[in-house]
Image (cartoon, rainbow, N blue to C red; front, top):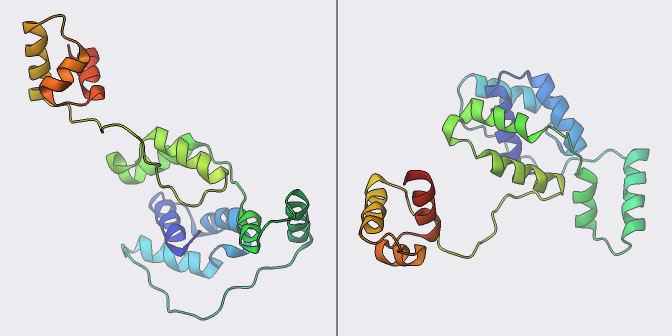
Length: 194
């Protein structure tokens, strides 16, 4: 998880009036030593509470040390036993991965509370939650074939309605051709608006 992801999480949780200590506990539970320090979480949370949108820390050299614990050693040992050809990069990702197991409905509620209608859909939250639990760190939707849905407007509804009135036996494909609307849009207009 990169700095921008941590910032976004802290910003959302702060907007929900979650205390910095709770935010720090959540981040540490999931990311361990890779999480921002307690002081950083407090500072960023305070800046967000004061209305600051961007936070810039001074650049510091070096990578933070990861604590060597018996749990870390056991986890690395287990991963290597499962896959003796695992790379160092894969080990780093695997050992950082833990789940808070917050329900997708809770995440969706919190995002909607902060962002309103600009929040991602519930189905998107479910999909992203699953991806994160599986260890994916980026949420790029895969390219899907087909034409995107066109907008459902009163003009489009009227156009489809008029064509169907003229020819009640017209097919969906013919409606698509005549209106230049996508298959999904034509289908949705017929099922929801006519």
